[in-house]
Structures are given as structure tokens and as C-alpha cells.
Image (tube, rainbow, N blue to C red; front, side):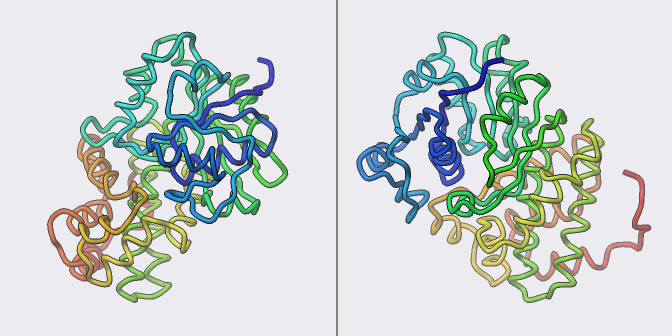
Amino acid sequence: MPPIHRIGVIGAGAWGTALAKHLAEKGLRTLLWAYEREVVDAINGKHENPVFLPGVSLPASLVATGSLVDITQQSEGLLFVVPSHVARPVLRELVRSLSTPLPFVSATKGVEEDTLNLMTHVMTDVLPPAMHQGLMVLSGPSFAAEVCAGKPAVVCLAGKNVELVKTFQAALMTPSFRVYADSDVLGVQLGGALKNVMALAAGVVDGLGLGHNARAALITRGLAEMVRLGVAMGADPRTFYGLSGVGDLMLTCTGALSRNHTVGVRLGKGERLEMILGSMQAVAEGVRTAKAALGLARRHRVDMPIVQEVNAVLFEEKSCRKAVTDLMERDAKPEKGQL
């Protein structure tokens, strides 16, 4: 496949804008779709996204649009970076604009709440069959602000079409943005989604002031839950020890820029969920993913006690301290139990 020169990014949140900035600065002709008219106008007029990525100067070569027709007609490939809960309606609108199949990369980290579908499953539901083999997913430890600042970041790109993955790997890579190729589309997506739920729990631990020991234990046992579910769903367990698993998990559970960790901290300090979410412009995917993760655990008969307690705190008004106590007082078990 020839190199990619023109790329469309669908979704102008922090991560979508950061990826578009990265690609435009590399020299690709980059078109960024935003739902909000004020975001389109600010990017084109002032070269900034004050709503979702304030304080970051964007290159003049980056063009924003509110038209999905523009995106599909002017691009050789698409990056999809919208919140998971609006993925399906945006994809349905996108299909109406497609005149020819295009390679498609999902950088959305989440699970559809009603169906428990991962993003590529939503895409195969909606996108034409000719595009199914060209679906890829991008994930890994990557705060948008640090990527925008040119700080080193390493991610993975997974897809079934090896040559297509290589083509987009080359399109995305720069000296400060390294991309590894993978084929475990399922595992990479699960890692990127489930780590947000664990970040909520880690934030609760920090909000309660329970210390580094407790947070390290939470992250470790959270990883064990992720692996159990992944294996039950057919993912490669090795994926969860890579960039989209433990890499993203460590970042999101410990980094000050993590929205999900921040929500957890505020819950641990006694704030109510609706007040926290009402004060945030960006989406904390872990809140919605928590319900979906519990649904997947029940569907596949996988024990995920941390996910269960996160749901109880979020949606059943269970106190954070009681949730931690219940986790600590579970029956004694071997560490390396059955997956």
C-alpha cells in the first residue's frame, strides 16, 4: 500500500486534537472534524482548541471542519476519536458520507454501554463490509498534553491487515512518537477501556489517603482482573502486559493528567458523582465503562471484584471506605488462581 499523505481525524476532544496536531506537524494534510461549531471556528481562526485543549498552539496547516462529507472525500484514511457513547450515531452519519471504503483507525477507549460491544464491533455493525478488514485500533499510555508538548510517547497499533498496519505505523511515527504494531485487536481495546475503570479505583485509594502500598496493590489486582476478562473473551494474555495494558494502566492510575483518576480522587474525598461530572468539560470514559465492564464480567462469568465495587460506589451510593474494606476482607485466595 502506498504511503498515507491525507488523513482525517474524527473527533476534536483533547486526544483527537493532539493526534491531528501531531500528524499536521509531521507534514500530512490533516483535516479535523469537530461537532461543536465554536471548536471548528477557533481552530481555523485562532489555531487553538480552547474548549478541549486550552493553551496549546495548533499549526496553521491543520484545518477543522464540521462536515463529515469533507472528511471522507479529502482523506486516504480516518482516525476515529469520539467518546464511546456517541460512537454509533457518529458512525451512522459518517456512512452516509462515504463514497469509497477507507482504512479506519479507532483511538476511542471505551465499551458501548447498552450492547457491551467494543468499538470495532460497533464499527462492523455500522460500516460497510468492505471496510471491516481494514479496521485498526490505536492505544497506549499517551496523555494528550504531553504529546502536544513533544514529549516522548510510545503506543501500539493493532489490526488484522499486516500491510495496512505497517502503512499507518509509518504515517504516525516520529522521533518523539513511537508506534509498535500488534494484531490482537480485541486485547488492545479491552486494555484501553478497562484501565479507565481501574484508574477510578486508584483515584479513590488516593482520595482516601490510603498510601502507595494500597495503590500498588490495587493496580496489580486490577491488572489481574483485566487479564481474566481478556482471556475469557479470547484475547492474548500477553497483550495486557504491553503498552495498551500495563503501560496505559500505570499512566492512568498514577498520572495527574488522568481524568478518570481525578474523578476517583474526588469521590474518595467525599464529592458526589453528579457534581464531579457536572464540573468537567471532557469525558471520563471510566464512569460509563464501569457498567459495561461489569456486564462483560457477568456475561463471561469472570470474577472482577474491583469492577464490582467501583460500580457500587458510582451507582449504588456505597461509601468509598466501605468498598475498600469489602475488598480487603474477601476470603483468602492464592495469588495465581484460575484465570
